[in-house]
Length: 141
Image (tube, rainbow, N blue to C red; front, side):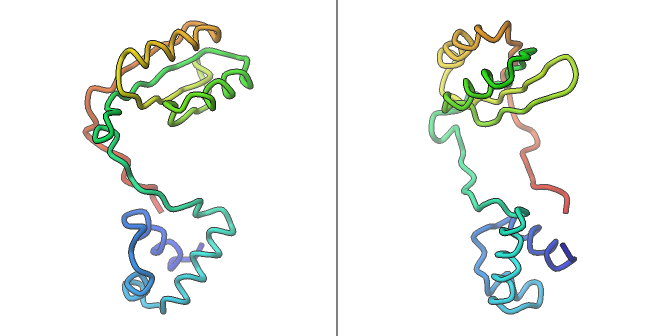
């Protein structure tokens, strides 16, 4: 990635709906040149997609929980997480916990059902988000 690609990625992280012509104007390239650079970054796996940022509270999905597992049966827990739509992320970790699972759901009752189902993987440790003073702002490029 050269400096122009870095500029493109920074702008797209902030507004993926920016018109190609406006993006090109901001970095001094034509729209077709910008499109070609973005396509190359997609092909290289640098840009994985373009998504809408959804407000889960507007969809009555305001409860965010982090669940930690010491589980060593990795494949089983991964498949379990893939089968639960409330799981928005699952990360494998080093340290005393092997997995961190992030859930976004509508209620404590739904979280409790998830935890009951997950009990086959051992005793989970759970944290519930109170607020988000700093949201994801993009990656440093």
